[in-house]
Amino acid sequence: MPSASNGLLVPFLGALQACTSVLLTLGYGVLIRHAGLIGEQTMDEMFGLCVRVFLPALIVTNLGSQLDLENGLNYVPVFVWALVYLLLSLGLVYPISYLLRLPPWVTPACVFNNTTSLPLLLLQSLQSAGSLRPLAAAAAGPDADDDKATEEGLQRAQSYFLVFAVTTKTISYAVGPRLLRDTDDSSTTSSQPTTTDDEEDEPNDDGQPTERTSLLPLAHAKRPRWLRRLRSHLPSAAIDATVMCTLLGVLLGLVPALHRAFFASSDDGGSFNAWLTTSISNMGRLFPSLQVILVGGKLGVSFERMARHMSSGRVPARAVLVVVLIRLILWPAASIALIYPLAKYTPVLRSDPFLWFSMMIMPAGPPALIISGLAELGHVSGLEKMAISKVLTILYALSPMICFAITGALKATDAVMNG
Image 1: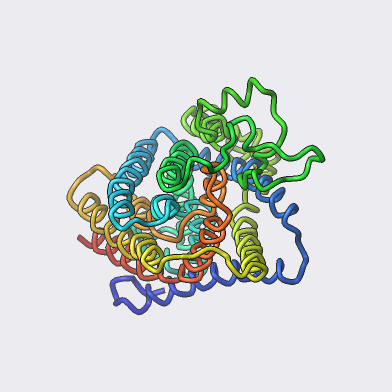
Image 2: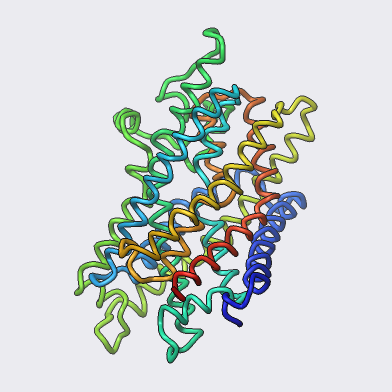
């Protein structure tokens, strides 16, 4: 694979192949749903399995294996960048949405992007296309084995994305429904029915989900009243398995004895690696591709609902334009422009090219599918939910546009390394 400095064509083609691979995986999910091979309830249950089992397993093994006392400071900029990115997004999008009188779902669609399944699968595709080899060579040195260095770099990049994802997910659960509810209340009449925190996630008497049942995974499960009251005062992600497993991964990574026991080879004292860690890692590897296929399946469900309803929610052209511009053009360009000088002229971002590249593309990509669940918690009307489905479909269809952001990030990273 030639160096990224040889021109734009090679990194662009690699990025385009990776984006096409992800889009095809989404398409497979749509086809599986269209063929009737999976039902809505099964998809909801599998979403819950992915979010509450496979993703936490991936976080524990990936973050724990990559984090240690030597590189622990590499993750601080990722956490700070997640907070800065969300604050800047809210500060930019909220005034635009208010001035242009856009629908309430525009703000979370512009603020919360897909930070887990899509970028993780994209990184795997970039590895297959050979686009990450120049970064691996710069990070490991010219005498290192290219394949091993690329695999290690891929694991580090995935761990950076997981920290970013957990941070943004926690905030999205905390403020997303409130954004939708506050904005929606200002534009609807007082006669619109509302539900309490104890009612909004409950199924009907026969245990089947209703129109008030949240789309968030397993949110309709019966819980004790004291727990529902506790959850009403906390972000749902604050007690979510992903947050707990992130803390567990940090503990396993930063405590040398635990790190050696769980992630070193058996000859070096890794007494848990060959059986326990490997089994958990096998579950974690299922998350990226399975989650993207399920996202495609959910988009397939949206197609079916739009076909059944002639009036399926009006989507203002200016609203779609704002989401496309911010999600696929403005933020990718801004993130590269912000991270590049920090990596080149300051020691803030350490010396890992995979950290620079990951931070440049973290804000890029289509909205997170979670905004459909946030719409449920925000008590958005049925027509607005259909409009959200349309926008998600449009944005995921346009997701290959991030190949330009990937190309720019690769070139900017290469410029920092050569500089």
